[in-house]
Length: 91
Image (cartoon, helix red, strand yellow):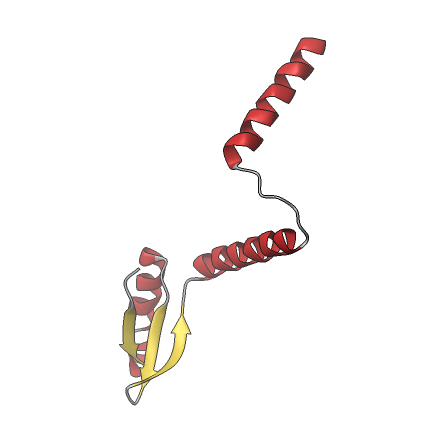
């Protein structure tokens, strides 16, 4: 991930450019004021995706704390395939 840093004046002067940069890269743009970090601007689609990832991580952490074992994705896929085959055989 490349860190994109712009002065805060850039948002006023070049809103469209910064908005396009956020949309094209999917990465946040960090705005500075007087040389110090001030704000973070990002595309709403990228923001929504990050929020969903954070929610999923929180759920996984809760499951681990509750003692629920992790199941590899491959195992889940194999189990689903076998159950679908079983259902198809009974039809």
